[in-house]
Image (cartoon, rainbow, N blue to C red; front, side):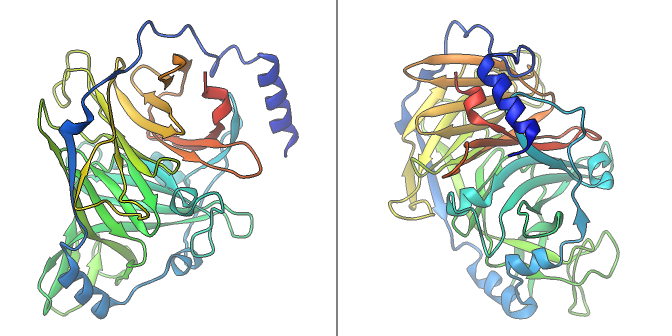
Length: 394
């Protein structure tokens, strides 16, 4: 443990963090319970089987360790000026990705989500971040991608980008196209990657099916070309969608899937909505909800139909991130620069938080403190960092 971290922990214990991270008075009210039975999921993990099989046969796959062996971007250290209570560590993307006004990081998950405290997937301990891409700095959403970031002293401080694609075409002529979603949340469980699709639910990807593509062509070319070669905006790897998780609501408005996170204790995914108190045009003006959906027993997949096991109406707005672990909840409000903590027994607590904060992922550790991983989306200030969850647990 570094001297800086020991000093930070001592300061926390002494109650000296009076600025960012110090709790303020608890809100007068916390979340209230909604009927969980009115929220269901319909899962189809085989929607693209025929075309996916043809793509795998045509292009071949690259294991995660191969992708990381060919990682071609260097992650940078957090700036020395960055400081939040309980800070454990983190990084920035390289200068090009940190300042890119056309690509925005959103969701975060890790190989600890995928496999538990052992933390290693295909030989690597990884932080995975989802992004959306716009058509220029002020354009519409065009596509989405992930970055796989090595977070292990055994390997270089590298990361690699992988484009997310939707299979199209036929078994005889398999193809793929861009997925123009916000990718506001992402969860990795077993071999499956779940990506939030705002108005629908989640898209499902299989980390064992990363495809190899030709890095030639132009930046605008995507999919199968008349010559039979496959381009992907100069990406060397694409991850094709394998399934769809559709959200259904029997009463009230449909859920808006703004962020998601894995809860390994209850073996579930939790989601939360981004809404506004008033004045929004692109987002709903109403109280947001958070809902928990359990995986099928003993599986890393959802049953064909899943009923929510918990549903909450929340008193907070502008929520970009959610996490839950062992009955505890965290909610990140970018607009309010607050991190809210809540349990049914202890009630709510509120902490000052970073601006442009996004998703949250709970990091279990068998030997040291559990962490909350999160990130900031703002161009030029994209800190990806972990804090000790004990600094934000009421």
